[in-house]
Image (cartoon, rainbow, N blue to C red; front, side, top):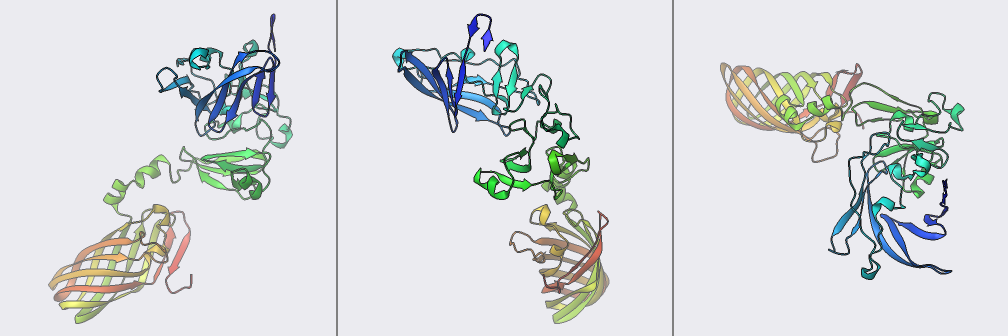
Length: 416
């Protein structure tokens, strides 16, 4: 680099960086090792100090710190905050160490720090006040959020401008090297294209999670509450439909909201009778309020129970029920509403009366002790009796339509 009369030559060797043939630093897994020259000559003598970087989910170096040799405490060397497209905030001031070879402190002031890997972990090049980031294939200007060079493979991604950075979504995506990607991969919570990955095996060897080659229309909920669909050649679409994780969904699925509304509302009818031992048969309407199968479903009347009866009763009833699911909303399927359950029931009637019950359902074919439906039912009853009941109930079938318009059927007698 030439700047007036000053010439600076920087050499890169597998992470080791030299200035004027003198070692400046080399990386370690959590930052870098600062090298300070103590003596010159054919075989320079160096002192080394460890510096640690704190990075965010996009690989941005947000904080650099080291041990303060005078106090023995950690001290911040550099603090960086960025606008979404990489322009650095200017109001933050960095601390620094001074060079003190006598005490073995060889960390130069931050203002002259040669370690310039910042946004996305890329090298910031401020020579000649260009202020660009070097991504390998291209140079990036964070002030305008655009590449300074045209994409050499622009014709393969015609949807995007050849100067567009990270598909215009730098909060979620990064561009590892400025080139075209071939497969979608994930590292931590970040999904991006990687031109070197062409199979799940390659991704695994590099510590990445293979997502898609873009041909299967892979979708996922974004942090903005929208649904992103990944396509081929770096193309992707983003819907405005609220999905799980969106603001409205987060409020609707909040534990307090679930406590108030319940997860399922039921209107049931049935007849029952017995003394010492009893039986019942019932049907009704279920409205599942949450989960992938949320909708309105009908029980055609094939729910039955066998009970131990303390007292005697014979009646017909119409009850209103509210049910709570103990598991995750994503497991709240139509299949989870059928199966066997234990219930406790009370009846007080002489002509007209009231019936109430509490039941715990095993949640159909979901194999988890944490996924249970707890239901509370109460309503009027016509008949006669004063009884308490403890029994087992079987619910076999539900059929109806989800709020998404799809017809669904659940049958406990079918082989799963």
